[in-house]
Image (cartoon, rainbow, N blue to C red; front, side):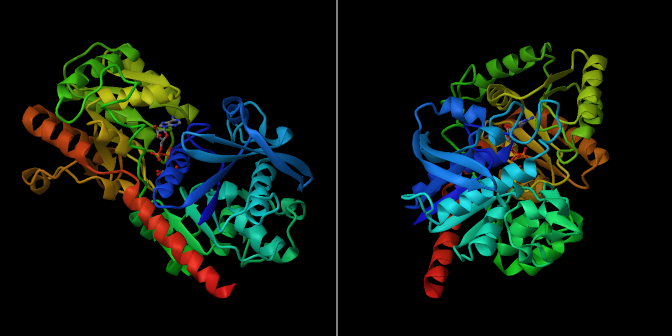
Length: 483
Ligand code: ADP
Ligand code: GLC
């Protein structure tokens, strides 16, 4: 079975968040289940620079008026197809935003073109490439099944995965006549969304199977609270909606062999983490005060609860702890954190920005990883934290609620706890959880047990990949009966 994964970012080529990590790791895990995956990504400058030795597959001459060269490359076990359209993808800034932080104004076109290319390649327009099943991810590639169904009248099976319902690709109805789709595609049963055009909505209603990245989030998005306006649409698709929790790439995230951290360690040599803790504090210019080092490693957004970090810092400092924040995002939150660091110069350190190197260093050296997300489809950072013995402290929502066992008395007594959860997810709940973590940190022996439990949890992709494989097999079987 051959899957074409159509995606707007993939680690290690280009990454703005967990989507890239998943797109980079799942194909390898599926490969181990005997499923071949080819991944189609845009030729952003970062991608082209890294893949100098690529070979040309052919040309797609007219993707909404743009000519694409498609090339092939492989990297770290990934089989890649690169969609090269210089005027759309070779730009400065990120994959979605300009250097000034605003969205690229033609994102509607760039990702419609990516989706259309996915449909064409899956259907065999560029032999020998073709696919038995298409796997599309998030709004950026949600038009792939829409093109298959409405432009090509094809029922080729499509799985659509929601990584985050908050980003929906909503555009004005004026772009409609430039998308290369018949008028029927713009009706209420496809792209029409509150008077505009909704890419994500179109993907949800035209795919055969819809998945999201944890069973809890799959339930949460069926209700108005976290359904983000699409709960009705999702309700209608609930018989084909599945939640499969993400795994992590345990080769890349392995404290025993990680080349990006000063000192490697495992569950039996936790004291070696001390050197890493020193490096984390030094990186943000803090002295070691001897208490728990809390860290936040995240996009600085409302989703992630980053607006609560400054208040969290007060509670942490009051208990003799320190806080290190690494991330970037909302300029107001960045400014608030800078002034928080100025107020507590020996206790709070902020690094605005993100590098993989620093991410690895932080999880290898901090004691507690704070993640007060207001909603979290799955969350990977807490999984990386656990694997590195950085105890997660999280809001009880989405994937956070099912990947962590709260350190309540019963769980501690049975030695199964792996972190701290709190609810309701607000500054009060967060402060309370910080107090619990600071208390627990005082008992060194039980703290080390907590770290060990977290480190021993299995978050490899194997189990989840088997669940994806089962769905793909069922899709293929259903397809065979209608063909
Ligand atoms: P999300 O995708 O919603 O940001 P996840 O927890 O699934 O959340 O994935 C986050 C991934 O992005 C992790 O690999 C993490 O190391 C990385 N990351 C963390 N902070 C940032 C940041 N500020 N910018 C970019 N990537 C980040
Ligand atoms: C999204 C979600 C995050 C998830 C990631 C990968 O960015 O916000 O929770 O882990 O996608 O699926």
